[in-house]
Image 1: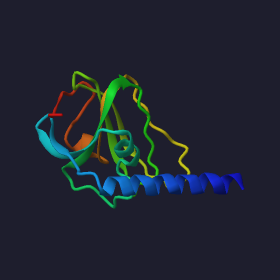
Image 2 (image 1 turned 45 degrees about the vertical axis):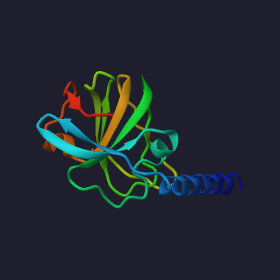
Image 3 (image 1 turned 180 degrees about the horizontal axis):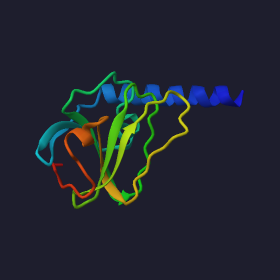
Length: 147
């Protein structure tokens, strides 16, 4: 019984998030990592950060999502309701890459794996899996974007 209540609660929260986001315009920015530039949607409030890339079927090769937080911290991510693997790039307030999680795998309703940076980050960039290998993005790389 408790498990059903938890699942129902999660479903209601997701529906509220989806309804809210349908009425919210999507902001994006160009993000430059080394010699590569991508377009990233901006997730800069609690609801947008909670939904993230949930329910998407894919990302184009040079697309991503930039999560913007109010302060540097050890922000934790999970892959709930994702359909494809991603690389997670943690970026500090000086816009330097401080950690990278490669090939984070999707999960459905129950997700036991979470991802957290080794250093505090203010921004998190999610891109397709293997992006960091293909474009040689490393810890210490500088990132440029307007926010």
